[in-house]
Image 1 (cartoon, rainbow, N blue to C red):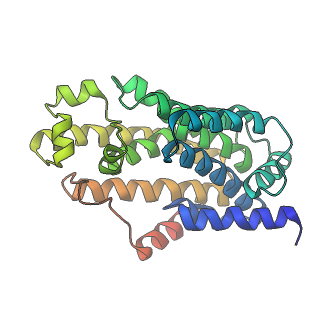
Image 2: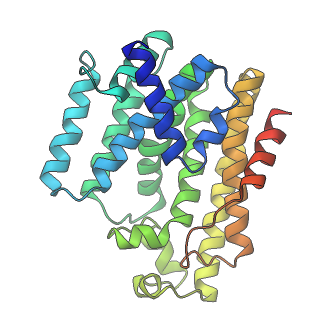
Amino acid sequence: MSDVEQAYAEVERITRARARNFAYGIMVLPKPKRRAIAAIYAFAREVDDIADGDAPPEEKRARLEALHRTLDAPPPAGEATWIALADARERFPISDQALHDLVDGGLIDLDRQRYDTFDELRDYCAHVAGAVGVACIGVYGADQPQAAERLGIALQLINVMRDVREDWELGRVYLPQDELAAHGVTEDDIAAGRVTPAWQSLMAYQGARARAYLDEGLGLLRSLDRRSAACVGTFAGLYRATLERIEANGYNVFDGSPRLSLPTKLRIVAGSFL
């Protein structure tokens, strides 16, 4: 097996092991596209692992800045993610800017733990998730960066809702500060995990906005071939189901993130493909 084949095998392993929903979407793609999307995911995972890791902030910053430089250089020998990503970038028109935006999203996480307004949060989501969508459309074969970005933002907004407890433990609150105040929710409420009417009102507002972004982003499907559309439709379906699970649970996301069962995930995959 060549170095490139081994690298692709590794990024697919990373995707299966680390992605909650991603692996179910790409399973419907033909092999070349599946491997390229897995390479993009593994790169995004590396950025996220650095930003969320235990290293001192300045070490994190140095490592993220090094990713910028490595994106513009030949892939480091022996590093599977970089070898696979370099091959994918040769095969498909993957946006260089989108990959750099992903790294900038990791740097934002170092500099900001709170977001005053939704405009600030939206910019962050565009970097960490919208950029993934923009990178992936080069593989899918579509020229719809705005729709891809909006879809990525929608998925990240659902992540924000789902991961409130986990983010709080990392010292971060992604829910906009002005919206917390407007709904009468304090950070003490988040720390205590209080599911009050005010909290439910706040989260219902977040959910409605996420659903609006999701619906707009799904316009991307009209520009995709059948299997790529099935892949993107699976991502959207899995996240929509997660949002519905949050809503059905009264927006109590403090007792653990909602998980979809394997049969539910496979039903969504099959439905998107059919």
